[in-house]
Image 1 (cartoon, one colour):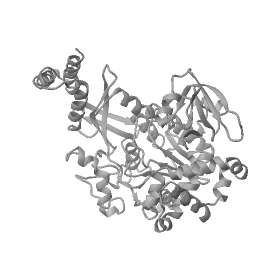
Image 2: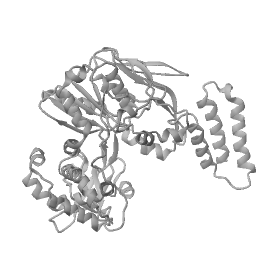
Image 3: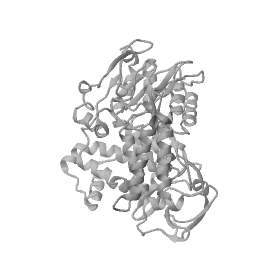
Image 4: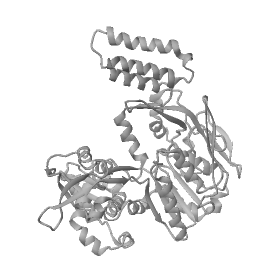
Amino acid sequence: MRKRLIVGWLFIWLLSVISPVAGQFNDEGFKFMKVFNLIDSRYVDTVNMNKLTDETIRDMLHKLDPHSVYITKDEAEAMNEPLVGNFEGIGVSFNIFKDTIMIVSPIPGGPSEKLGIRAGDRIVKIADENVAGTGITTKQVFAKLRGKKGTIVKVDIKRHGINDLISFMITRDKIPIFSIDAAYKVDINTGYIRLSRFSATTTSEINETLKKFKKEGISNIILDLSGNGGGYLDAAVSLADEFLETNRQIVFTLGAHSLKKEYFSTSNGLFESGKLVIITDEGTASASEIVAGAIQDWDRGIIIGRRSFGKGLVQNPFTFSDGSIIRLTVARYYTPTGRLIQKPYADGYEEYANDLTNRFSHGELSNKDSIHFTNASKYYTLQRKRVVYGGGGIMPDVFVPIDTTAFSASYQKIVARGILNDFVLNYVDENRDNLKIKYPYFQNFKTNFIIDSIFLQRLVAYASQKSLVFKTSDFEKSKHLLAVTLKASIARDLWGSSEFYEILNSVDPSYNKSIEVLSKWNSYFSK
């Protein structure tokens, strides 16, 4: 009976979701349903119809475009969590270190911080069950610590310098997932914001940060959207609104069965004047491209970095009774000049998926002259009539090639395997109190804490213990980057992610170019 219900459900979906005009697809729909009934009732082997249904829908949607997708209930919950902007749990950031759950930091304002749980604490028991030295996984930790708001979980903690375990009864609560990774003052006039996603909390986070910047006298903004894969359209429109004058079109959408829908700026922008730089790269996609495209089209700021991903398709969710979802492409995004953001996908899903690899192999990431838009069309910005291109992402005004000069195979391995992170966790754990006494403020740490050659050799020796031999040639090539990454990682464990990026950005070419552009604004903005 369940199998036949699934077949019937699929048939109804074919008629009601794929085509608004059900009669138009009756023949095809009946054929589809008959195939499923034949497989269910006549096929030589027993078939898992649930699995077949899922796979058939996925294959069918892949043939439409790269971003129409089918998502199971479990997948939907996992994917939506970062966008919804919160989860329910005890509010800690942790790592599995030496087979023990180690608190990297309690989330500010969360239930754990309020009870006095500290960075460096080890969770030994959860609900009186031993979890130290048991081979526990990150997924298992989530399952034990997360739960409905208002429920209570007992956690026993081992704290450095205290012999006995400390027991905490933690009442779970909603824990925010922040979309701003970093926000700090670069100099007296400039503020930096790194945005990782466009979520339900992005608007309030940005508003709070910009108000703080205004109070501090900041008039110039570096908005880092590198690696930002997008998220909610409304959050993107709200962010662009902060920088544009009243009644400027930000984006419009249009599809064969979707009327044109336009989005405009309001009078609520906090930074409608002042210098604005937006950093993009090949990981900047969707909602991020809407913001970058609007700012570029209205000549409001300067885009720095590399060509963005090129995702300009609008998906609407269609939810089924079992909790699964189809996100079906219903329209396309266009910038104010009429540029299509979406890159071509006529050559099929595999070729589309390999686009970033192809960009690298063709030299686009390192050489501006290697960039070739497919079916590129010329457009002109709305204020200064500069040439911009549509049909494959947002091309920056100032190109910054990817810097691979300091990257080596050994560096990549020491980071990817988590060896550098474990080394830092161990170092901070053993020296936290002394570091906090010697460097009570971050700026003091930033100026005076030095990663010297002896410190680096300790890391190399630690890596060797973990069966990673750091080649001498790789060490010479990567030692400066290694030192900066180490210092930034220590700062993150002592303070937070803003401090991490403030140090790491010192070796980021796009960030440093942004500083240069702001200091020579007229020479760049007049181009």
